[in-house]
Image 1 (cartoon, rainbow, N blue to C red):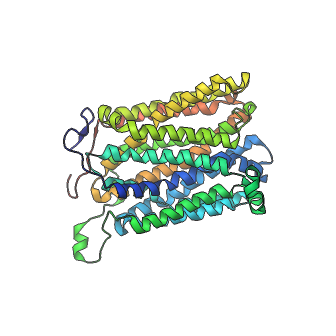
Image 2 (tube, helix red, strand yellow):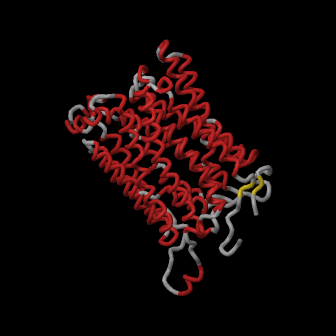
Image 3 (tube, rainbow, N blue to C red):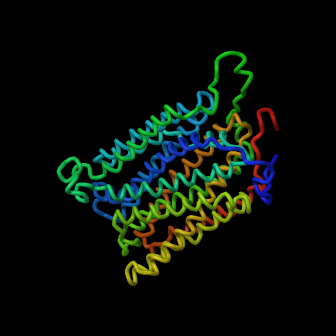
Length: 457
């Protein structure tokens, strides 16, 4: 049975009550990933610029900063499918706990890193040990049904937006506490030696508390495989080839294109805000960069929490998703327009208006992720292959999120160094990719599939 795009989602039957406390724990655990990934954005370009690897050349920062931002997703791509498939067999909870441990270790290591190689190792640790995103999506799907799926899946972008709000603010405000808060931290030489340790330690502490919350309070949503003939006949786990049905490929491909454009935009934002106006940016300080990035996340989260479900119920998944992808075209076009206005008169009212418009478009774009989650969940061949399906999706997402930051920031630096299209070639390329992604949405069905029971066709 499929859910019609033209029919409100909740009119067919009464909404099933949600297990609120269990959802709260899952969302709390999910928050760890955007916090740990976004906290470095306000200071990563400054940190890389301070290392001898760039030779003091600001135009090279984009290459090295983009690689750091990509490494988590590179390493995650190698393991996330294995973690998600393992969770189908041993349970979701053990995999979540390992992921939280990995994030904690990575953050502590990143804060204590004094060389580019150490930063690389720290980010790789997070990706290798963390398969939580796919597992959490599986648990969300198992705790919901067709009557409340829009309400549940809308919460995941809200959590990401919350992390994208808090993470950059923490990273911007707590970076270099030796100079920012001399009365409190100026007495300790440690904070001068490790100027970016404090925000990393704060995020590590969050991951550790999340570990214990999940350990003691989270309930398992799948029954781990037991030995014996009876258990073997109860559940048949599908092979990778069996999971890769046409509808899974369509859903994951569209999700991947959305994620590629989103991560490219996210990687460009702090670089664009940080670089001097003459280099194609706006010349903001790290605290201001953090506040700007946080504002994007804050408004997006509020919108997702209050508006997404009614819009989804009214217009359906496909039309909402198409609108989301369309917004990337003007969002990328606004970058050179902001720099143009800043070059003439500095950052002025017009620049702020353009930045605000980009924020509004970003809020609309973020609805696409809720739709993508719903498409991927409903594309699963069976309920017992939900973990593997989300694992495949997350593997693809990890690959494009590994490519996106390093490709977009490197193309940004390459465009500046070669003065290609006035240094704005990167934006032309990304507008073209946005148009291709919009073409890809034509393959999505106008109806959302429903996950069949085991044995159903």
